[in-house]
Length: 143
Image (cartoon, rainbow, N blue to C red; front, side):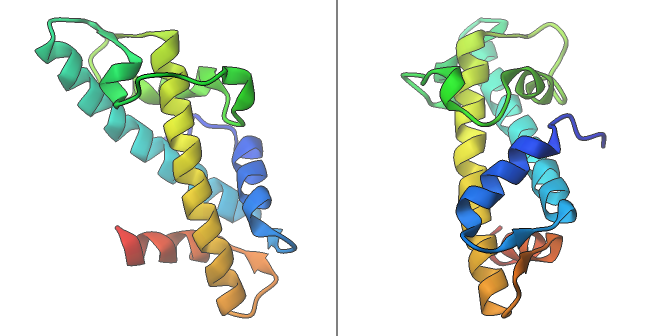
């Protein structure tokens, strides 16, 4: 699977949760891959909701979001989020801008939670760097 999400914003999300820890490039890459997988799954569910409602356009409400935030307040860029949303859904679906922003917000919260836990795992292992192993361990423990 090709990762659509650029690593730099993911790295920024990890760093804002890392405190004084360093972040390996592999950790950013692994979290970006996991974010993409989660986002594609959420979009599939949203597409099912839209179909049930007789629509071909995914809306923010299809992601369980009533009000969206300003896209400029997000670290994750909206264009790659749009591509992530379309990975596993039929081409006949459209993704509204509000839905893209809602999905980006959900995925950023998801990434913050994972990054916070990965930092705890790295500190527990008495390391100064968050690695891909910390991200993988989080998912092994909590998924």
